[in-house]
Length: 242
Image 1 (spheres, rainbow, N blue to C red):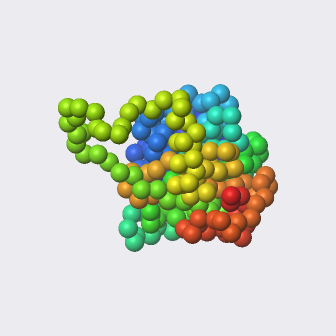
Image 2 (cartoon, rainbow, N blue to C red):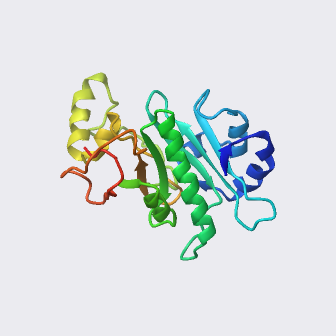
Image 3 (cartoon, one colour):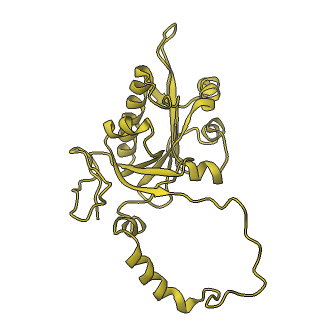
């Protein structure tokens, strides 16, 4: 049975957080707190700063796996990010049916809980081609974009003189920069800034897929002709494409 996190679950979450899947890498990097610490500072689901932690404990003397999932609301928006889900799925081609069943149960509970608290969208980020893809699809999540992250290994030496043609950005550049952004960005991405779909974080690998899920009782939508060529929408998913 899935229940909100309580003090009796401290040892369970402490053990499982070591093998949890990070589904919001940006939050994990900018707010490096363990899931247990986050759960202890938010004992009531969705209250305060909007964290909810749910635990699925295995029955006594059972071989079934236990797990937990942790979510956080986005400020001033009817959306939330899935921060952690434990245990993580096996990497590579290995399969664990029991863990996959646990993921399905926890994700379905997340969707139902989010809908019950007025949230319209849930977000998770996974590595491109990761084992999480099938579980997210089964839970009603839809792939809507992908992102490549580039890393600068060594900082370049400062230039002796300003590069010709470059200057500091000023207020007068706002309109031109907006036009450049609009003309060079796929239509799906600008719409994430307007509130219809919001961008998710990028996991640790260089190539990542972004996923968005909507509680089926709170939002209806349809795929558009302008949807991303990499996007796919399940028949029961209700994500609005621009």
